[in-house]
Image (cartoon, rainbow, N blue to C red; front, side, top):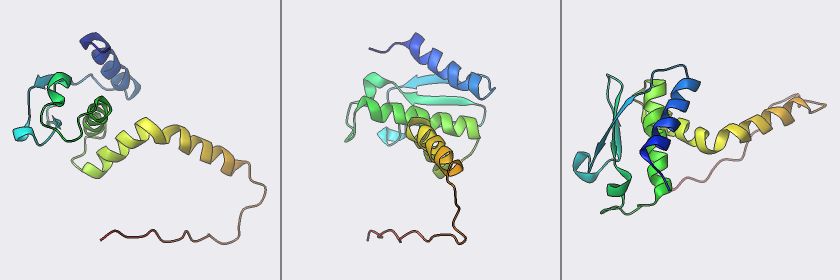
Length: 128
């Protein structure tokens, strides 16, 4: 299934891609009284809830959710940003958006005619 060696290799691969040192990852049973799954500190240390303990007492306890938490914390590490929005965007792009945005850029380059005026997108419905 998964193992510590595969996890370290994956983290090292992400760090190598961004030309950064690999972060020091520490494992815990729970963080912030069970509210969060991970935390990134100023010194580059990442605290994560161990995957075996992830499933205890959580509403969304899937392995996929744990992986998204790891990507989110790596977003904080790579971007060195406190903004949750940036870390969420990094995690989303890392999983889904990279290939989709590349396809969109390729198709935009191959269009023959560009519209003379920017097209307005329809407004999204707001939830209350």
